[in-house]
Image (tube, rainbow, N blue to C red; front, side, top):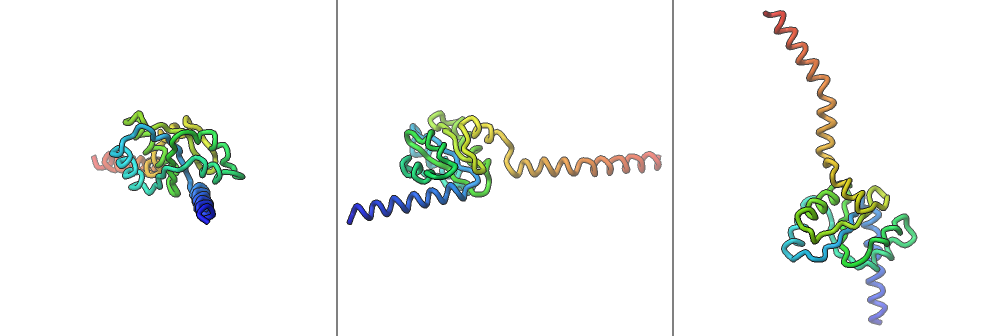
Amino acid sequence: MANANIIQEKQEAVQVIAAKIAESSSTVVADYRGLNVAQVTELRKQLREAGIDFQVLKNSLVRRATEGTDYVELNNILTGPTAIAFSKDDAIAPAKILNDFAKKNDALKLKGGIVEGKVVSMEEVKALAELPSRDGLLSMLLSVLQAPMRNFALAVKAVGEKQEA
C-alpha cells in the first residue's frame, strides 16, 4: 500500500514537471552545487520577483517528464544536482538572471535549457542572456520609430526659426 502511494506521488510529480515544461516559454537548467543558503535564497528572491519558478528537481523525474517529447535531448545535461527555472512570460529573464548571478558566484553553472520549444546548449543560454530584456527591446523599437518624426519636427522648427530671423 505504501509503495502504491509513493508511485502515485511520483507519477503526479512527473505530470506537474511535464506541464511546467510545456507551459514555459523558457526553461533553464543549472548546477547549484557549492552555493550556500544565503546565495540560494538571494537567487530565489531575484527569480521570484521576475515571476520565475525555480525548483530543485530529481533528474529521474525530469527524464520521465521529457520521455516521448521533443525535449528528450535535455536528458543529456541532467547530471548531478539540478535546479530548473521555469518562465511562462519572458523567455530571456531566467537566462539573464541566472547568467548574471553565475558571473558573481562561480559555484552556479548553467547547463542548458529549453527556449521557445527548442532544447539549447549552455552557450546558447548565455548568448540569450546577453540580449536586452523585452522592455529594453521595446524601448529601442520605439526610439527607432520616433526618430523620423523627431527629425522632421526639428527641421520644421529650424526652418521656422530661420524665417523669423
